[in-house]
Image (spheres, rainbow, N blue to C red):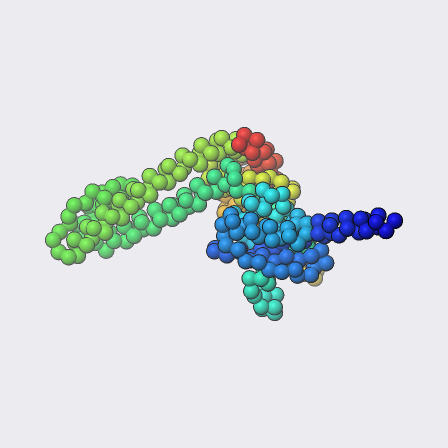
Length: 365
């Protein structure tokens, strides 16, 4: 009898570390990640720092598993500094939650250190107050995001180049201005790129170099934008067929919306979640006897801008949308309120299309 009890006790002790769940929280940085481990009861078990490479990620995982059953982790910056760690943890079967940084008032009261932030990330998961699923960043949606990021910077630099070129021409000698100033940006840049010499004086020699380089820069950036546009067109025609079939949705807006949704459609529980993600969900702004809603200024602003573009195109060319705007205007709604309603209705329309396109894209990949 005593041997049986001792055997049962030893079995229980051997299974105890696996039965006790532990939760990992990670504060991510460029060169070092700091992890903190807490128990089911919220007791801090320890902290651990690792380098940001696969060897360091595996050390962090092994360290956490040595304390018990590790199934959940809260990570700050899953789409930036913590992207590599997030992928490794998910590959090892962990549920990874995206954790926002603590609010500023809490930081002012409690102070800030990397171990503290890591512990707060773990406690957020323990309290079940973090439900954001990280993007997988491994499919067509991530490819669209990368191309869109590069295109956005190229367009900005291209606009800056032509503005600088025109500013130089405005203050240039009248003869040079009349010779090189063109209403079309492409013609103006081509003329400046072909310059050889405007004169022998230091001013004219410097102006020649500045105009020629700006012209060549604009032309090079224009080629980049054209190539990126072709890439987005191909990606959206291949992986966003349903979305592209809707009125007013082009390659850039479709790519932006799919990139915001991510490659794992299970992140979007319903259309309200997508509306909140795009910053078009109506927010309560009631007080006292006043009952009203206001515009949502949160969410992803690039997705909000994409919905704004779609709504503007439809308000201009879509008969059904024009009739809706006229009716709501007669009811006394302002233009901002009408636009907010339109963007919310667009989300309702495209939500099942985004899910279908993403599911098909994942199955294809």
